[in-house]
Image (tube, rainbow, N blue to C red; front, side, top):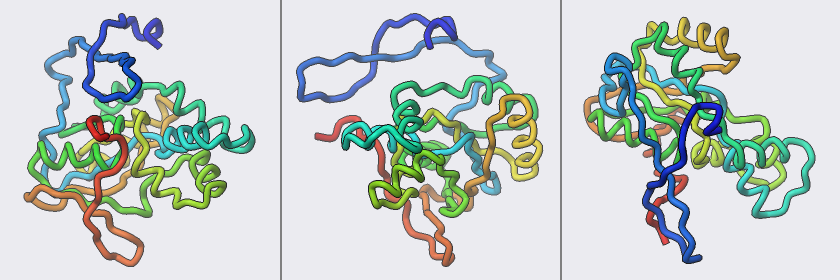
Length: 221
């Protein structure tokens, strides 16, 4: 992956480990000032969109730790966990047609990373549970383990799919362009609904529950 993008391995990150062996990685680089998109900047009325589908990496981790046989979607789930691909092409295609106000990649889990946009933008975000795209391999693994596939989609870290706040009127053209250029689908999964910080998950019955942070916790025991 480093060879593909011309990167060099140097170091970084802050985590904990009981093993005594820590391999830390960080990424330092540069970007055109006009193309910088941070976690801050989302405004009320924005749509929240995501590239690809979620849950595959967490499904792969559980398949590995629980020794699921490599059949059905298990092999693809393991691949998504062990060899994730960053959405560089998708980000480049997105800025060709959209005006992203805020962006983050899903490295710790959607339910945690969406909170970063909400907090740093000072807004409230509502996600539509039924709209969150779940990877087919995650659906397969969830069925094998008897768990809710949405649990995987919300908690799955190491996905590196992009979560972006863009104006609602740009959703359709953005989705069409990104898929045409990269083959990756873009899905609207919610919106920025208020000035106050916070995140909710709206379920099929219309009830909005507080979105509990899940996924990877860097300094948990």
